[in-house]
Image 1 (tube, helix red, strand yellow):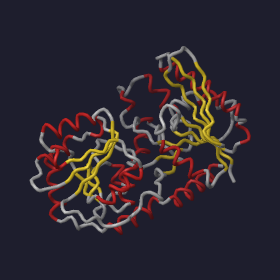
Image 2 (cartoon, helix red, strand yellow):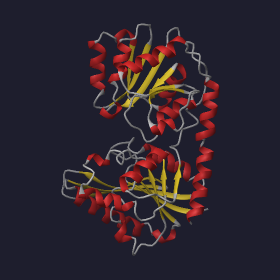
Image 3 (cartoon, helix red, strand yellow):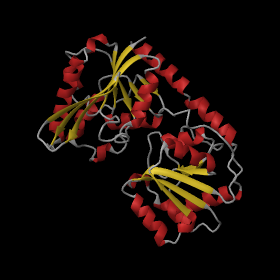
Image 4 (cartoon, rainbow, N blue to C red):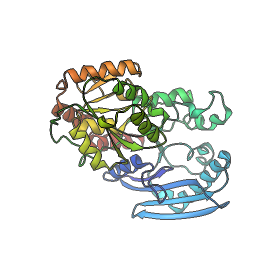
Amino acid sequence: MKKILHITNWYPNPWDDLEGIFIKKQFDLFKEVTDSQIVNVQVREGRKLFEFKYFKYSENEEGYFILTSIKSSKIKEILTTLLLIYVLFKKKYKRFDLLHFHIAYPLLIHYYLWKKFIKIPVVISEHWSAYHFNFYMPKNTKKLNGIKRIFKQNIPIITVSQALLKDIEEFSGEKQNKYLILPNVINEKIFYFKKNPQNKVPVFFTVNAWSDIKNPFPMLKAFKNLKTDYKLKIGGYGELYPKIKKFIYENKMEDKVEFFGKMSQNEISEQLNNSDLYIFSSNYETFSMICVESLYCGCPIIGPEIPAIKEYANKNNSILIKNNNEENWLKSLNHFIKDKNIFDRVEISKEAKEKFSNKNIKNKYLNFIKDIL
């Protein structure tokens, strides 16, 4: 069994138990087929100039943190590298077959330097949308050169979608020759088909960490102008959540809308199994865990035609909207309401499980690791 040290900058921690939860789910699956440990290496904002924190999460999960009041991203990159090197020596990195980094930046920003004396195979897993948006900076910003350099060193890379791989290649200007497309991990004990809902009116469900990129207002305006009866259930939190509530109240939609706030996985699964359609409202996704969880439950999805989602969405399980505007949302919703039995929920669930099963993920990961080593 291969011995692997996983290293991540995002991971559930004492400050935020949901931070990087998708990485924990992946690690929990990988450790079933490898001898794995994971270390959370992170520089976080703090009140003091420097403060070191260590946490042992479990037998094979640890957290190493530097808390600092310094704002400079350059200094934080240096601190991250120093902390990483300290952890590698503390963990006796030579006893591992491979270092698996989850999210390249900032952990690997100085890899081109330290790889010269820490010689061990490295692989990167990427989930991040920042590459698509060029880290929200102008394209020729010199600050980005260090991040681009990470992907010019022939490091094998795992991405959650083909779309994300393309984003990284366009961002870095470098073709990635050794890669694996490996989806995020679905909790198959929670998300599965239970029943066909028997709703008197169409029930739509959506849940999100609501931010500008999720762009809910074209969808909400369509619901405002929907003439037929319906129920819209909205879960989640975030900076736009109060604005969504305000929109609902100002447009007198309260009798048709129900708010849930932050939801557990079990609560989300229950709503997916009782809803006629799951709504994804977004300008961009690298994968969309909730969309695949919805399909696992047999609940068809509706939302904008986003490349990463098009990799698994088709006419048998979804309605994709070409232009994310109120008019097209309204047309698509009316089309579904006229015949909400157009989808076979049992087949939707079966197809999703065949494509994204935990067993497939483990097998693909093992084969990729063997190929690297």
